[in-house]
Length: 293
Image (tube, rainbow, N blue to C red):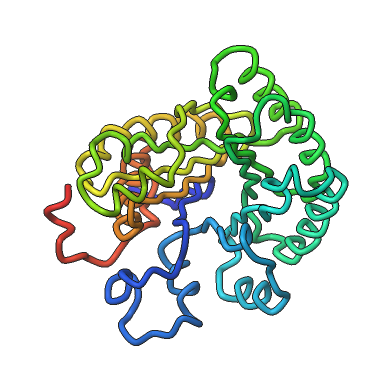
């Protein structure tokens, strides 16, 4: 039976440089300069959160671009000055900052994935015009994805409908946060306690408003407890792929140590349902992996 690699599904982590991946994903003794190149052997995308906190330099952009293959996609977070400083600056200033960021990202032409504009829970329905005007500034061909955390945007009524219509009309995507796993048990370890304190507890509404739906999955440290959620996502991803969508899946866990295993498990479930495709995520054996599933 001839198999081929699925080219309209992207998997990535929230980082590519985790110390606990040394000796597993990465060779012991390998330098940080080659870490992204090593990461790209397993995943075809990455969520770049550093752009949310600090400016990118031209040198950094050039280095990152050259370390990954042509089919790799960077998914950046838009700087927090754009989304988190409504009271500190004018809309015009926020729009200008976003224009500058778009200009920087243009250097990633061909390797730029779904860019994420993440708003805090303080940005609610009263700011819908603000969100819309920022969306109008987006000037790149690649997909823009919007993440909201105010609970009114999850009301399954007028507010959520208006927000989804806005994104659909502009051919932009909703970032779907799935934090259900980390809130499915009490916090019995430090990493789970930290995740429950920091990750948003918002409803998971898997609605695709454009061609590149984005999932941010926050996995539970007990690998078995993720299985029911991964089964659900495998079915939904197959639905989207059959509909012509190209989803992005960014997998976290409470400490991100075993997030690669969750991505590998989810990809395997998707490919089992689709049939005819070969696995892209083939991780080195982790000593305790056999007992995890």
